[in-house]
Image 1 (tube, rainbow, N blue to C red):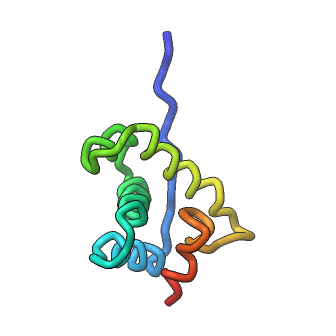
Image 2 (cartoon, rainbow, N blue to C red; image 1 turned 60 degrees about the horizontal axis):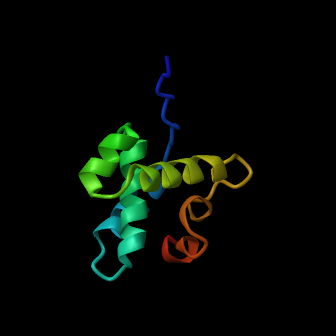
Length: 95
């Protein structure tokens, strides 16, 4: 019998959460950047990957990809949000 693996956990600092929230609500940011930031915010809030895909209207694969990418690239030595979503996101989120 096949079991569903546990979703990758994402923890955000208050500053990262604020920056992602602003990016997800911005009317001037690219739609793909808004989607990625919403995926990461929902994942950090504890939502399951399937729930994220249903709520945002994306595929399960897309939700899973951005959850895993963010979690993998956020290691103690990296520590910056720009490393988890998109190479150019760092400059957009500069606080």
